[in-house]
Length: 163
Image (cartoon, rainbow, N blue to C red; front, side, top):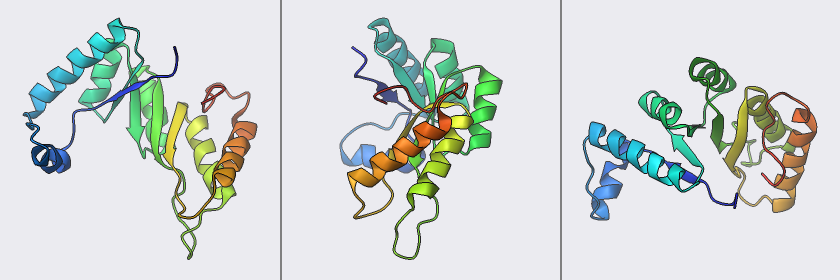
């Protein structure tokens, strides 16, 4: 209950070789889109929340079936635009820090700034890679706490409790 989210997409031409390497057929785009829609509907019939990744037609499918649109590395403007244009819940995935320092480290403030912008733009969840090799879970927790302090009370919080 509430602990499983199905993240679906159609793949990209860059992932075709990965499919083929594992013996998985890489179907034509229209076939993959139809399969995505069918799979999303079936999962939702069983009460499984569905996030559909991608742009354009996949966002339309998400709206049609009542799923969530997941935008990878989208900026705040794109998040706001998708929410407004499609009247749909939007989640975000990507790397929280954009410009690591010379040692590859990203400051807590920089990460909090990025995630705050994403939350204020209307993303209800952020699924992010921890950007700095060698950084600790404590640093990540500190960044999340900072974002929650900043976004708390906004009309579209970044994530609910436990998110």
